[in-house]
Amino acid sequence: MGAYSIGLTDAPVSLIVATLVFVGALLWPRLIKEVKLRHFPLVGEEHNRTKRVRNYFFSAATVYQEGYQKFKEKIHRLTTLSARLTGRLTDEVERAVKSELPQCDDWTPVKITDPLLNIVTIVSGLIFLGPDLCRQPEYIRAAVDYTIDITNAVGKLKEWPWWMRPIMSRIIPEVVRLGSYRKEMKVFLEPVIKERGRLKAAGEPLPDDTLQWLLNRAEAAGITDIADITHMQLLLTMAAIHTTTLTATRILYDLAAHPDAVEAIRKEIRAVLNDNGGVMTTKALFDMKLTDSVMRESQRLNPPFSDGFRRYTLKPITLKDGTYIPAHSYIEAANTPALQDPNHYPNPEEFDPYRFYKLRTTDVPDPIGYRNREQYQFVSVTKENMSFGFGRHACPGRFFAANEIKLILARLLLDYDVKMPEGVETPYKNLSIGVVNATDVTKEILLRRGVTSKLARRENSCLKEMQGLPVHNGVVVSALRAFLGVLSGFATLHLIRPQSSSGAVRMFINN
Image 1 (cartoon, rainbow, N blue to C red):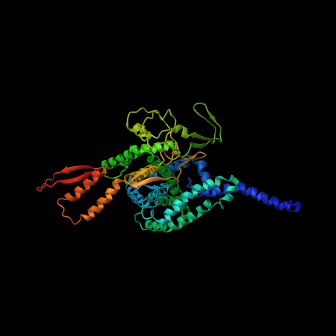
Image 2 (tube, rainbow, N blue to C red):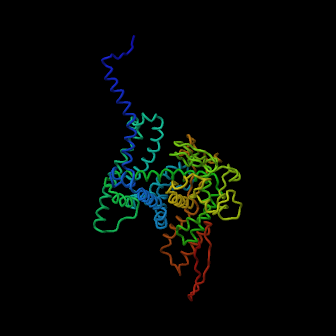
Image 3 (cartoon, rainbow, N blue to C red):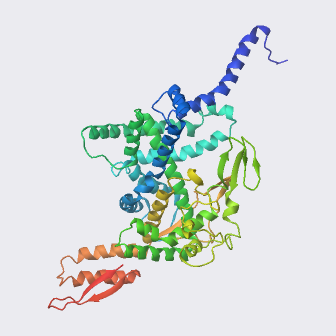
């Protein structure tokens, strides 16, 4: 009748097959986990398992001290280097913005996530790999595609039950491609790593970038496999690129819907540049308090996750108020409700670009009552704002990301006008997928080269044409610069009578 039967003689074979499948499904995830852990820096990783157990048993305090020191060094590495990195970042941001954004004199629709992804990749790559490698097409392609596919791969794998994921990981295209990106990055970095080994052996100066920091730490830990190093480099790149790009995209969506805030930020940028000799120093970035306020307000209304402080309890915990949490419980905090609590933020549903600027710079009432109002900075983590995490596990790269976003916004807003497309009056809504509050990367904003950029290009053109004209004490050129600067609305014209007997009047711009 079309039925399929298994005879008794087939039973042993079928049982063996079923047993193997069952055991494989149980053991494979654990096996994969152990393989992955080999690539994760561990305390005592230079010893075998037996010696690590012995060290822990007889000298646990030493093990914890080593772990704490490693954690502390890695967490604060980028933070302490921010001062000397800022100048290099500024130059790279200017080049990247110029190369990736359209040179449009009329309003042009741009899916802003696409150029931002390349800009963030290049600028982050300056710190990760150095100036000679961060603009290489091989690096940009592998870093961008790896970032996109690993994000999509997670979602595709989660569609399957846990016991099917090891099998599906060999079938799902996004997962399969991850291996090819690792191979491409290995081919790209292998000659670079070997050359740095030669430089070190010869006692020559070594580059100051993340790759070299990884190489130094890997050598100290006895890690020599280039594949492991390139994999760590890719993961670090992915972590920096993905979140920074989405955050910058969301901020630009909000700014495009609030043109008054755009002009106010431009004035702030010009002011801090004027106060810092025209250089975007670390102090200048800190002084961009309105920009910082807009960034935090955008994050307040659009946190990446609805929850925060995800933890798993290893033992029972009793809180101060008597709340009992049993062992082996998953706990989390409600991040979005805290960020939009009307007791903390008046009119919490409104986008107020000055909300945190006022809280940091004026005597307006502090609804939360922080001891230090600098806790309203974009990078601050508190129990009322866990967008960057909380406690010792807070995002270690948030300081670097904040400076990078400020530099990109400064360059973009000085060069371009931004607004929403015709008929769109409110910021774009996010895509809610479970606890994920994702920026909609398919949307467009309108860009147009601003008056400042146009005048700068016109100035350069005029100066070339005037090279053959007679100039007395620089009056012609200086007057032209002053005239164009005043027209652009960000320069003050000064007249100075030199001490020379000619009495000629000289002009200069105070930006």
